[in-house]
Image 1 (cartoon, rainbow, N blue to C red):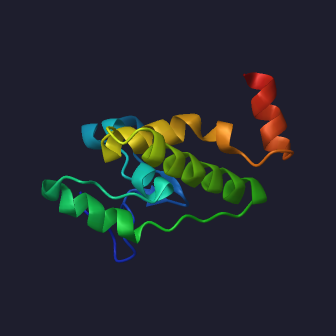
Image 2 (image 1 turned 45 degrees about the vertical axis):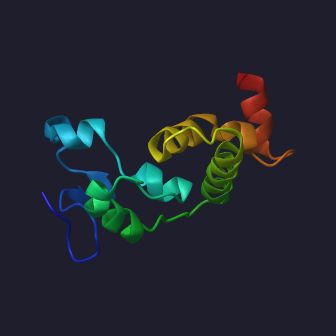
Image 3 (image 1 turned 180 degrees about the horizontal axis):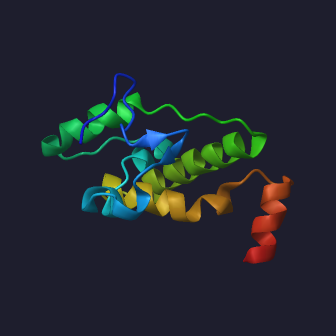
Length: 118
C-alpha cells in the first residue's frame, strides 16, 4: 500500500485506521511499530524495507503515561537483550511489549496499577 510523504499509512485518518475492518492481512498480522517502540531493527537483511519504515516512525506522546510506558518498553528491551541473548530481534521486541509493565518506574500510578493487575 505504501506510505505518504511523512512515512504514514495513507489509510490513517485523524490518527486512526480508516479501513480497520477491511485492512490488509499484513496489517492484521504484522505491525512494524513494535520495533520503533523497542528501539530495535529487524536483523533479517531481507527486511530492509521494514527497517526503513521503522526509522520513520515518530510517536506522539501527548500524555505523561505515554512517555512512561515507552520508557518501560525500552527498559524491558535492554533487560531482554542482556538476559535472553538467544532471542531474535522479533522475539525480543514482542516480549518487551508484552512485559513492559514490569519495568514501569517504581512508585508511579501506572506501576501501582500494574501490581494490582498481577
